[in-house]
Structure formats: C-alpha cells, structure tokens
Image 1 (cartoon, rainbow, N blue to C red):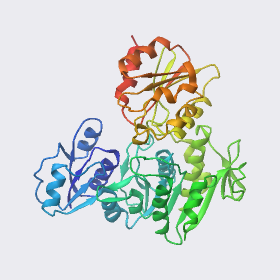
Image 2 (spheres, rainbow, N blue to C red):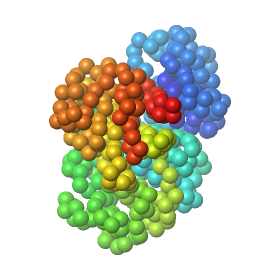
Image 3 (tube, rainbow, N blue to C red):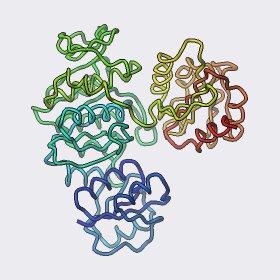
Image 4 (cartoon, rainbow, N blue to C red):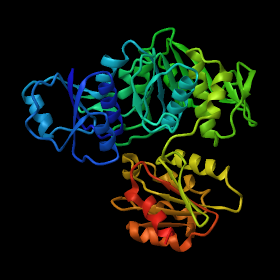
Length: 450
C-alpha cells in the first residue's frame, strides 16, 4: 500500500508512519514545518518528507492518512475531498491495518499514559514478549517511540483527544483494547471537551466495545472512573491503588507505603526504589497488572522495572553545571505539575531548592481553564517563574497566593538572565512544558557554563 500522511511530524502521526514503513508500506509525509529531530528520524526510516501542503496531491496513493492537526482549508485536504480520493484518520488506519489481529494493551487516563505505556512495553520486552508499541514519548530502554513486531501483543498510549476533523470520537475508540488501563480521569482538553462528562462519555464508548474476556484495569480511588464503569461494563475489572486507601478496600492490586506490592492481598515483592513519586508507583502498579493479564508473573514484572530507565522529558536530567541541575518534564496540567514537584522533592536533600519554570502551553492552559488550581500545584517549589508570552489571561494574578516566590516573564532572554542571577549550587531547575519551551533548557545550560 502507498500511503501519504498529512501532519506527519506530530508524535502520534510520526509513530503511525514508522509502523506503516516497518509493515512494508510505501510512505510519504507532509507537514507545515519539517525540522529535526523528528524529520531526521523519519528520513532515516526511508520516509519522504514534503514541507507544506500543495494543492496537487501525488498520484497512485492508496490512502491519505489525515492527522488531527489538519483542518478544513488545508489546500491538500481540500483537493482530496474535491476529487473523492480515499482518506482515513491515523487511529482508524492503525486499528484496521495493524491492530485488528493483535492483543491490544491500551493505556488511557488524564495523566501518566506515556510513562505507564513505556513501563508496560519494557516489562513485556524484558519478559520475552517482544511487543509492538506506539508511545507518545521515547522510552530510554527501547530508544524509539513506535514499532510493529510479529508478537501477538501491542502496547499503545490511548489518547482521549479527538481523532480527525471528520471524526470527533477519541482516538482510543479505534484501538479495541483487550487490556485497558484507565489511570485517572480529570477534566482536560478544554478546547474540545465542554466538561468532564463529555470525556467520560468517550471512555464509555471504548469500554462498551470490549469483549467479556477483556479486562479494564482502573484506579480504585478515582470516582470519575467508577462513574464511567456504572454507565456499563461487560468486561472483567481489576482495581489498583494504595493499600491504606479505604475508597474501595477490596481492590486487586495494592502497594503499601513501604513499597510492597500486593496482588489479592498476597505479597509479590517490592517496588524498585528507582520508581520515584507516588504517581509513578501507581503507573508501575497498573503496568504490572496489565502485564499479568497477558501472562507475566508479578515478580518478573518487578524485576523488569528494576532496569527501567524512564522516558525522555519525564524528570529528565539535561545537565549539571556548577552544582545547578537542569531538569526537563512534560508536566502541563496542575495535577501533573504538583506530582512532578513532589516526586523531585522526595529525591533531593532537604536544603536543596526547586526552581520551577513553567510554560502554560497546552490548549487547556492557554484557555485559562485551570487557572484557579495553578498556585496550589506549584506551592512546594521554592521559586516559581512563569513564561506568559501569548497568554491572554493574567497568569500573575493566579499566582498571587505564592507571594514574592512567583514571577512572570514575557521574554525568554530576560527569564534566562534572571535565572542565572539567582541560581546557586544545590538548586534544581525544573522546566515544565508540553512543548519545546523556546529552547530555554539549552539557553540556560549555555549561560551557566560561561
């Protein structure tokens, strides 16, 4: 099959392109901006990249695969529609062409999808399953975001974002998971969902299509997930949570405060100390449960987690100069920001400072939907700097409760200069954004080295 992908440089669509190429299809791709490192990775796989969207499509294309960043008015899309050329969405193409005969393990939820997917893929890899996978980040152990394999198993980060301009269902509806993790469920994606109930409805669409012998693996302490299950669930349900939680006392998978992992109240071993932060312990517990559903013994899953090296852009240490450590993280929702700061705090000396530098870049944050939660999510940091360029609402006003610890900047050069002035040995600069953040990480490291 010869396919052309519109919006190929997005993380998900690049993964689809890689899998299509590995599966033997001929792939060309279009994007408005083609630049490294994604462009280099795609070209190394033999994928032809075209910058921009011409209004004349190539000939002999069997299917145009449309990314969800592509909207009406795109010249190439308009020609495809006018000429009646065959097109599909990325998630539907993937589901129909690659996943229909696989045991799909889908990892969904507002937070932790990428890390849990990476943990699960690594557990299966280390246990000899050689799974295929598509993950919205780069697992350090595996080195790539996506691959297809001969294995019966496929791990996929199951995003609730919409599928395409012509299909407003969540992406995960197309994956038909047999093992479905729902880590947590909060309001997010304010640009496409009016409220939490709308997101829950999408999760219900996925759950209602699962067979009886499939399994939903859900966070026992999350009332929003329970509301989804009450809408109808015909599959097995396994719950996970903290052993001391009284929300649902009979959940199947538990972890104690000391890190002991329990399955149906029987000890399975201890969580490796390298899995830092309560949120990551929950991610790992869900991954262990999913691996067990396909046959991996918990003790083997725990052994694999001993060698798990994490995911790029998740508390990733980029460098340390003169005792100042610069750390990158993808956190952009207040819940994730708080969890990331707390996880970092648990690993550093008590006298060390955390300097939180964040960019409210996600669509939800740009719309100001989470402004009331922002100050509380950052309260455990010693100093807070916000980059507010292009933000229409008053970020400074939302941070007033933090007093003089918080400051806002509209210019990255000024922000970098201010950081250099106040940093001292023992400081941990935690950069948080779901984008490139204007390259501030490299700017600061370069500044500190001079």
